[in-house]
Structure formats: C-alpha cells, structure tokens
Length: 349
Image 1 (cartoon, rainbow, N blue to C red):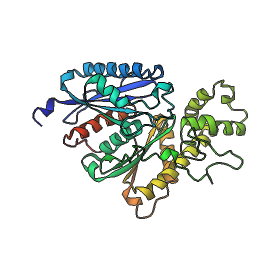
Image 2: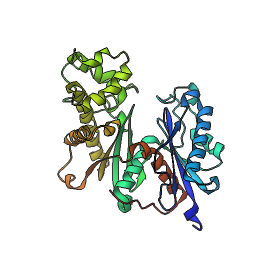
Image 3: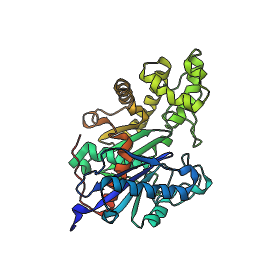
Image 4: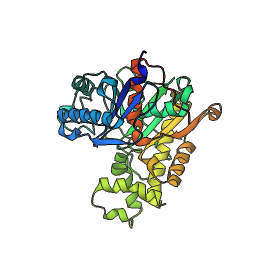
C-alpha cells in the first residue's frame, strides 16, 4: 500500500468504568507505550458513552502526535454478551445496565460518530488476539490458542491460525458458560455455584469476581468464622479484597482461589478436546497479584488441566501480557487485519 507507513489504526477498549486507547501503525509499532485511560460513562447510557469514546479517540491521537487524517480504521472492543457485529445483547449485560443498551448497535454508532470504519470484538477476544500474536510472533498464523480472562465475569477467546474464532452469532468460545464437573472442586456440603446467566456449575460461577462474591466467599466464611472479612460491610468489597489476602498467604483466600484454579483447569481440559490448542493463556485480576501467588495459581491451573501424553510436549501455559493494555492493542490488531495490511510481525516471547 503506497504511503502505508504513515497510516495508523486506533484501538479502543471500552469497559464498565474506563476506556483504554492505543495507536498502532502499519509497521506494527504501538505509538503509545503506556496506559491511556479515560472514563467510559457507560452507566449514563449509549449517547454519552459514544461521546466518551470519541473523546478518547481524539485524546490518544494527540498523545501519539498523529493527525486524524492518518487513521484508516478503529478497532473497538466491549464486554459481552454482544453479537459479532457489535450489537449488545437484547437481554442486557452486566456492564451495560441502562435499558437503552439492550439491542444497541455500538459499532455502527461509533462508526457514524467518527466517520471511519469500526471493527468490533468482545473484550476477551481482543485480549486473546493480542496474547496470541505477541506470544507466537512470526509463527502466529500457524498456531492456535485458548485464553481465559478472569474479571467480574469470565471472558474467553479462541484463536485459530492467528485469527479469532467468532461463530455464527459471534459468541463462539464462551467457555465461561460451559458446565464443568463439580466433583472434587466443591467441598461436601458446599452449595453448587450459580452463575448470573442462570446456569449452575459453569465456569463463571466459580472463576470470576461475581463467583467469589455470590458463591465462594459466603461458603468459606462459614468455615473461617474468625476471619477479618466478616467485618467488611459490602459483599463486593470483601470479594475484591480476597486476592490481597491470598497474595499474603491467607488460608481461606487460598482455598477460594484453589477452587477457581481447578475450574479453569477443567475448562482448559475441555478446550484440549475441542480445539487442541498450542497455548493456554490466563489473564485478569489473578495475574496482577504478587509473583509468588501468580505462579502458584498458574501452576495449580496446569495441574488440573488433563492433557494427553501426545499433547503435553507441544503446549504452553502463559499469562496474557500487558494486561491493562491487551484489549486496546488486540482491538487495534483486529482493525489492521480487517484492512488487509500485511500481518504484523511482533517478536515472539
């Protein structure tokens, strides 16, 4: 493409509270090397949120020192559930509580506002794409991976030959809503975890902040009647604090996260039979902890991932890199792909 070296795409990662933004040029260089964050304002409804995205778009271009005329496309990701075309589920979504979001076409709205092509992915797919491309580098187009991103819910993504597997409605790879065996995961007398989606015993009911708040912590506090978290007035704040306790070696908190690690291992075991990937990536809040906890958690996940002897020497377990920036960067990569630019050659890990 003539003049392609001056062309850029912008990646926008819209979350429940913040937008992360980045700029990527056609040579594969991210022109912003730090987190560029601004309020997403999604709680105020779609119209306000679209303006917040437009403001973030302009701000990150200013930081990168790039003109708007250089932008060829925008990559956008949001939490799901949403269609492959960026239409928020008609049933609503945890991060989009305002009723005006139901069935809202966020991709088309941003495209109209900016006057540029907008390429949509859900946030887990975007982060998964970034992890895959960075980890495998020049070999990315010949490799496959599955990622699980532990946040308020449990996001996931499947990458095959370097590209996101979307499915007919854009909802492929939703490992968080696959039921997993509870034998050996929950203790005798522990209630079966229930997910916000209505399923019982799926991955997200255990491996998510919501799972800690609604299912795991209430049970484990009955087993540790003297624990300090009994005095925390808010169930959500208590759930958020569990990771810090686990990082400090607290027995109850480690029991909570051990159950999460087992659940993730069982989901990866399912992935091993469904897609047989080259790599299993783990992201989310659990990888933002101190290294000792992070390494213990990943090792526990791997211990509970049941692979065949033929698979063992071929696979890698790794963490999603640059976690806070992974979504925006993956969204930008997806925009490059949609433009038909030559595949970006990131150095492999």
